[in-house]
Structures are given as structure tokens and as C-alpha cells.
Image 1: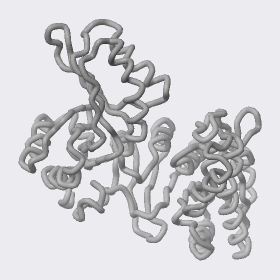
Image 2 (image 1 turned 180 degrees about the vertical axis):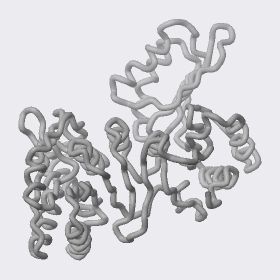
Image 3 (image 1 turned 90 degrees about the vertical axis):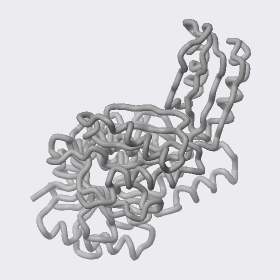
Length: 406
């Protein structure tokens, strides 16, 4: 008998029929003797609908009250699931975030889980019940409802799996697993049977939308085995696990891309201590995330500094740096929103020389110019013109043999 935590996203619980279909699956698992904790998102589109309602009153709703409003979405789905299970003769109970003792900080709209007290859930499991928990929400030290931000239900599921020491945490979505790249871009993309935590972290940070990065970080920290699979199929998905538990390390496991970044360049910047702090401190204070940073070799005590920021923060960044550029005596402040980042990820890179050269050669052959490069032990990223994104992804996918069965 295993303790299984399952999470179902918004598309999986988008109608009463879909909720009933999941309930049938849960009933089968329960009758096999397993303990089940099920985390649900709101119905697809419901969170956006609730946000729109609040914004009909004001463009900037109070964040505490907005969290109270948004929690209705998950409250609805968990209650409906428990009602369905009970109607099918399966003992079940729904718990909201505060009832499941999911303790978060007090940052409304993007709270972080600080602790989970599993006692209530364990008591309900001991009574033979399926426990259905609202994802995406918690309670702060003041007793106020908080929401966990994008991908919050994934994070809830992993946190519960860690606290309960579950045997596995199954993340059900509308795809069958983690693929070597986006199947919408490369039709020969393959589903991976296994991927390491480190590779999944990189893929998530680079734009792969299967798992939210915070949930992967939690899984790494607590060694929770994740199983990413489809709600609408019995097909085995992708296991996310420790690198040493994967027999064969691929040199490159996947190709990721993202188009939501912009490039900022300051030219002829005085190369002296304190300049970088002057540039980046106001950006940091504005909670703008800087990704890639490249500084050219100094010539005549002047250098060019280039970095990337989220595209949604591009206008703010440029406005913020306009006076800074004058203050430090930079020659020009340049910006480019029409960029993309393509990356290759693979744990095997650590022990295989020549991977970068192979990547650059593949892009050159495809006629793709590289604007910026950054690397880590298991990742190489290149910033390119946005118009060449799909071409670059397909070229790299082919070059590293990802379309071939391992």
C-alpha cells in the first residue's frame, strides 16, 4: 500500500464530467488499497474570470481581498470532487489551504510556503478517506488567506508530498509528460521516460511549461519523486528524480526556448568599481529579474554591458536606466524586445567536451546569428533574433539526435 499525492490542473477539472472521470480513477486507486491525497486547481479560466470581476471595480484590487476572492476557485473544485466521491460510495473530505495547515508568508498574490502541518490530513487518511486539498492557497501568520502565484497547485502538491513523506507525487496535466522540446515547434519531439531534478529545473526556468520552477525546487530539497503524466490517458509519463537514479545520462536531454525576454545594452560604460551596482541596484529594488549579463573586455577604460530582463519589465527598465546612463556617462542606452533565448540542457554535458562548439555549428549552418551566450554545467543558452526561434529549436533538436529513440 502506497501513499500517493496527485495534482490535477484546471483543464483536468474543467467540467462536472471531467471531475466525475477523475473520481472514477481515484475510486479504483483507493480500492487497490492506496492512501490518496488529491490537490486540485480551479476550473480552467475561473481564476482569470475572478480577476476580471475585481478589475471591473478597480484596475488594482487590494491584494488581500483579491486572494480571498481567488481562493473561491479551488474551494469550488475540491468541494465538487468530494461530493462526487461520496456519491460514488467513497469516503472523502475536502480541505482548504488553512484547514490543511499550509502555512505561508504574507506576500499576497505570490506567497511562499513556509511550513506544512500534516496532522489533520494524516487523521483523515487514518479514517480511510480520500483527502481533497485546495491547491494554490495557504494561510499566513495573521490568519489571512494567501495565494501562491503561478503554478501554485504544483507547489502545494509537492509540499504536501514532502510533509507526508509520500511514495510519489503525480502531477496530472493535459500533456503526457516532459518532452525533448515543445511538440508544437518540433513534431519529432519525444517524451522522456526520466529526467533529473537539475535538468527539470533548467528546463522549467528556460520556458518549459510542464512544471512550475518552485515545485521542482521543493522536490529537489525534499527528494520527492515526481511523475508528470496526462489526466486523459493511462500512459506512463515522465519521472523527475535524482540524477544518480538514472542509469544512462544523455549528453543533451532537451531543447528549451522562451520569447518573453528583452535585451538592454549600455555602451561605453566607464570601467571602474561601483558602476555595476549603480546600474543594477534600482533594477533589483524594483523586483525586476535580470537573467543573462555580459560585459565586454575593457578598452580605454570603457566597456559595453548587456543583460536581459523579462519583456513585461522592459519599458520600466529602460525608463529607470535613462537617467542612470547619463549619471555614469554611458554613451548609449539601447534596447531590443525582438529576441528569444534557445537552450540545450543535459546532465551529460559535464563530462563531454565539444558540446558548445556543436551547438554553435548547428546554429551557424541554419543561418542563425548568436547575440549572447551563457553557460552552466548542464546548460548552454544563446540569445538570437526572435524570428529564428523555431528554426533554431528544430536545428538543435536534430543535431543532438533528440528525435531518435534512446
